[in-house]
Length: 309
Length: 233
Image (cartoon, rainbow over all chains, first blue to last red; front, top):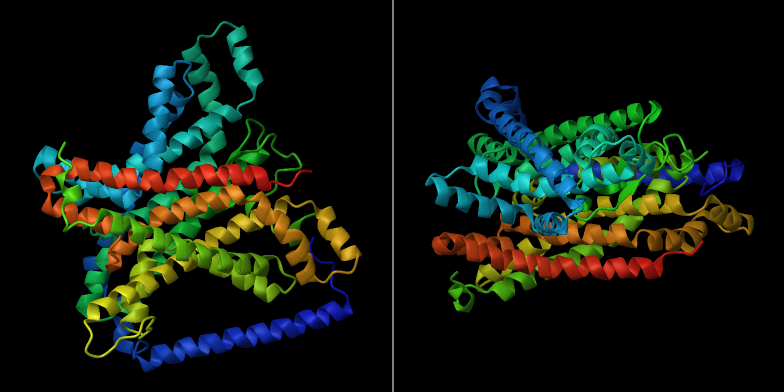
């Protein structure tokens, strides 16, 4: 706890600070609204297009579908790619381990847009046809495959050593140890990390709308906006859609994590708190928590100071 | 492979990466300051501030950066009239537009990245043993003193490595500024592969190498900084 349970004086101070801060927020909100009103952004005709079915069926829903489609396909392909790279990085043979390591580090240190642009040209060169969809999916697979490789590696390393030793002791071969002992335990433990990586993928599909011209939600929305002349309301609605989707995914990740904590079994791999991002995923610190239910394990979302027991 | 475009005066590779570095530098400073403020608000005793900071963080980091940057330019600047540069009459407006877009992009990156800085610092605050804050309170320090003199310095030292990851991600994220016409590395690559389509592999290698040159040392420097800064307990 950074502060004591407030006594009468602290409560008074808190109240005063709250009132000042609240008034500040209210003033800010009032100012924003008055700017919006003075620029004619709050008028009915700017917002009514969202009541028209046509706006949704022609622009927004196809855009949303394109976003989800690219994200889903990327994850489905990136998972096996990440698993193979992650396992390859743990190989006993240097000639497998090193190339895998270089591939993973290479694709993690390059911006996704650059990968998408390259994939776009590569596809065009190979098949003589432009495919923004393929460019987006390939770019996302290369990047997220590398990020997931690190998640897989951390997950496998988090399985207690005794498991491997016991498996060898009963005479299993290396490949058997990996496939029937380590992987099943690792997969359950890293499920939360994989689900939070979904948020990153969903957000990154929006990169496909700028240089390679994939008509995902943001791009579809900008076409709708130029049609109805309501840029601000359209981007507002799109932002809300993204926030809802990603909050749901984030909650799913926490839920899965909590489920896994309460059941007995392997440890839970956790990516650093801020990692629901292109971001940390870059070179994130993967924390490997030891035992479920031990003192160091607290629900990830609720680790604010005030909740510390 | 043909790297002849490197000596072509039409393409300023060094200039584009310099722009990437500038974007990263100013955004990093701003994001760090705003991130610390948000983190302080998230742990402060006033419930309204805690809720506000938490809400901001959860909203901002769930919006794609692309959307934020494009909104900065098309909505905040063009529709609501935010001006971050001075437009002089009679001068070529390109200079004004360049400065304006650069500053809008930096502002967008600051807003987006500060939420991740906030989360990193908050997780650092959790690594500071409760005894530190208790002892600080016991000698009569106020909340701002406890946070500013005792807890935050230790918390930030504990999260040097994650902050390094945030910085690397920010470096890569600056490519999104190409969406509003800031002439950095991704926009250069776009121009290059439009004009020199047959050399796209060479172009990719050059741009990729540029980013590796930028991000690899950052990772190494922050790794060794983290070791030196870590609090011995």
